[in-house]
Image 1 (spheres, rainbow, N blue to C red):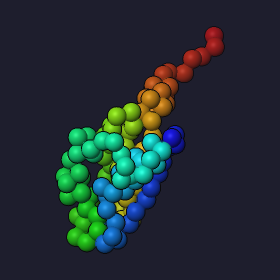
Image 2 (tube, rainbow, N blue to C red):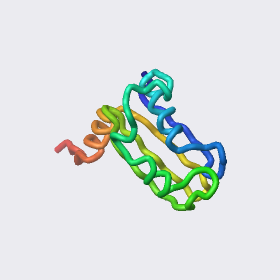
Image 3 (cartoon, rainbow, N blue to C red):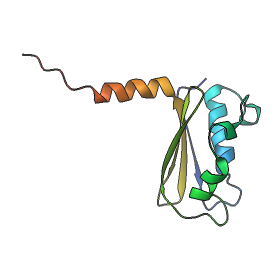
Length: 111
């Protein structure tokens, strides 16, 4: 298993598939091929809506933004920049929660 996986694809690539990229990144994180995942991504996110929101390949919508969702113990983040680059990041959810909790904790001062 990999602690964090980041893949990028070009929204304008006619062979680019957001769904396949998400599956591939999850597979890398889990240590398996994306086609061999022992889960159905549709149980965790509406892939059709995600593709319609951001678009990939011919006829992409041109929208920018970030969507995140949880797949089992993994946090999946899809980030679409104005330069038509789509970044898919997968990291352990526990690690992210620990980082967020630590960042939210106020600084302790020594009196």
